[in-house]
Image (tube, rainbow, N blue to C red; front, top):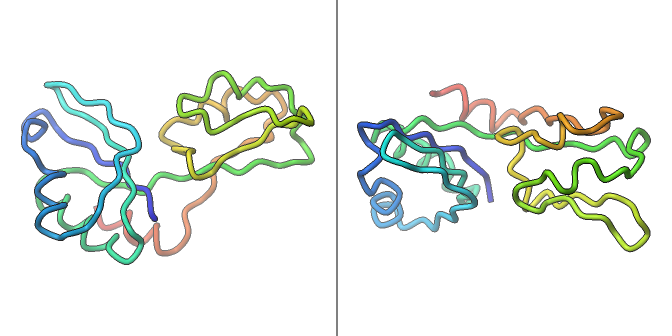
Length: 142
């Protein structure tokens, strides 16, 4: 599954764009987080890798801005397991393990959309990961 960030402007936010694309393309879309109001919104969603290009194209044709968020990477040699990042994570992707080490769940992480853990890390052990070539190509077609 690939994660995408969808941004909806005020002019299209009330349209059922996600539902239309699910029905039209017959592709499951899993909404991870959503912050939407009458002035616009942002949605992080997962789509199957094999459908990524056609889903991105469909959203862009309907006026949504689409990007591929970067995830995070942890340098285990720099990480001191202080826990500064744990309580700040809005999706609970970071936990303290039984052995008192910090554990990151990349499946839950929403990456550079948030970056709270990156900013909170006193040793700078957490960084945003660069996109791979496929993601960069999809992202550059905005």
